[in-house]
Length: 251
Image (tube, rainbow, N blue to C red; front, side):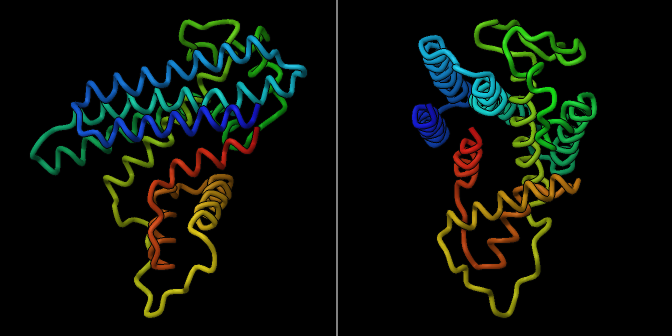
């Protein structure tokens, strides 16, 4: 199962990256990405139907960790398209206000779902049998965020988790647009050499990000990456894809 899921995620990320590098109109790019995500989700649904979960823990892991990451790619693509096509042109102050408004919208969403967002951030497990098992009687408070669902391929909270992932990523994107230099350290006279591979530094960045989130820090992954790049005199391109691979290990 893990190999199958990793292959599907890597293939999806490659397709999305290709669409974003093609230079096609935004609407066509979005349509291509959505089509790619839907194709993968259909593939996953068929795989789950043909290979039923043998234990509840496996079902929880799939709907809590795996499926939300795939759906988040769809949600992020839609949000990014909306952000890009609705932004004001030519006025820097208006553009800054627009980005700040979008950030407030994301924070308001997290506040509206404070309990579930904290459960997500702290990787809670106590209520997983209600939130991530198909057919479970979950509290009504979270079902308002569900789209029309497929009972054989959805649970009470997997879509909400996907929105958290997509909105966190959009929040990081907006922070990078608003504060491109925020959180970086002054240039050092002598930079420390990084003793390992770039992938090791990305893993360290992800671990630091998770720890800071647990400590209620508002630092974004963009800020952490920029700080590490400046500190070690190294570039870490396409780190999001690597983060997706790291998170898949939790399955």
